[in-house]
Length: 150
Image 1: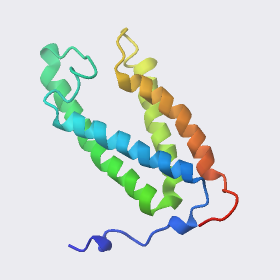
Image 2 (image 1 turned 60 degrees about the horizontal axis):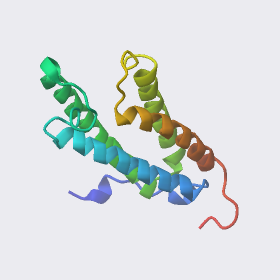
Image 3 (image 1 turned 90 degrees about the vertical axis):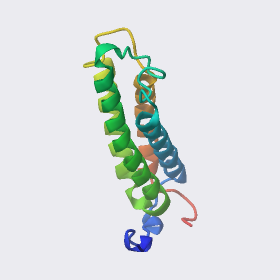
Image 4 (image 1 turned 135 degrees about the horizontal axis):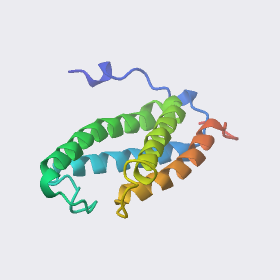
């Protein structure tokens, strides 16, 4: 299989935003892939050992949902990494989608579905932080940088 056939020509030279936003997207991709691998590969998907969720009688279902979510995170994180490295003109769109994803997760965890108890797994806190940082880097990605564009 020719990998080049999967990837159209790079759009990096069309990107005018901040390089910091690109590196933030690289970090976000890693912070998407690694939890995806954890959710997919750990015996409990990280639900018990990391998130502190009582698996009880619903344990098999919770573990299956964590594995399913990990199966979504891994390819999405890889796509974010490809965008950051090869298709930088899509960085603002990816940051916006990440802000939406994390914002919806934070709303569910703090205000809606997860708000019924006192326990909040690490992701609930990380989602709130990411939304704030994501908005900063989205603004940087949309603002043309000054000086040489190389």
